[in-house]
Image 1 (spheres, rainbow, N blue to C red):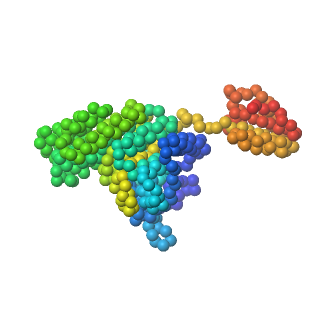
Image 2: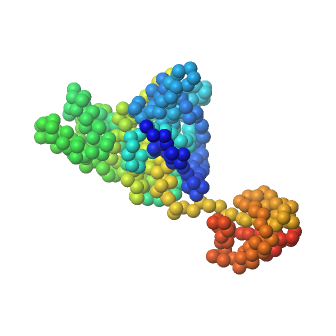
Image 3: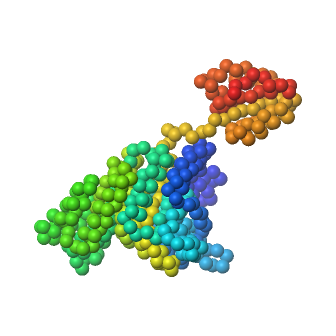
Length: 411
């Protein structure tokens, strides 16, 4: 194996240059402020966790975990999501705090990937966990907050698809009773949005015509509240019917939030069926093929840490949102330039400190007197709509000091 060149990076990681960092921090601050306004308090957990606790409890498959050994030979993992670490904290440091708990976060997470285009081994997530409330109101709250957070981040056109793992579990148990392997294959197709593969799997089962038609029919169960009524006619299984009833209640709460225009019911949307226990959802932006948010209910996780409790939440795919917004959102603050010659240091730096105290972004630079005179003349003309270029950077105001005196400049 050849030695990496000095400028190479591992596959799946990237550098963020200043403009991208500004946009990323803008998304982070805006969404966390939105979450705080809904009563969610931010939490930070370690980048590394024990494999036998958080690693084993994570929803990430074992082969996608980054594992390492400490100096005592204990296996650690780089966090692959934030839900399991937060469950650990809720069950330990916050064990005396009464439910419900509302927690938010912004963190980088790590997942080992195959070397394929468009996949990242390190990326950012911003999200919330609502722990200790099993009601439809809690599920609707996190969906409504996900919508508010996307808007706060600057995403304008998107749709949220919500489903319920209990509906498919009940329907498959009713129609394919005892055929657990076949059920898992069908769920895997739906999880991967492989509807062609789903139909092929169904045909391979050689089911009776009414059952075949019923199971193919769920692919059309996508839409508004009317889908709940249609789904009630599909199955007589109690679990399936309770799941639909729960979704109907969630929809009623979402109507109170006034966000149903962004939501559709999709009963083929099940999320990770080995992890989620109830409502699940994904959000897609109009101009991006990947989900920008996902979440759902995971009532079994907290029990693994000794404090059983229902929980629901979501994670914004912050890195994907950054790619989606690109250069459209200019989050650069106004920048001020203070230039001075060697005789004007005290006056110039004094003004710079004053402006910084007022909240301005200020760059100081010592130049020769002749260059300072040129900048004074340039700034007084306020070229390019008031933007003064200097050393490849745009400045909205320039202050020039020559021989201890302020010369021209824009305010």
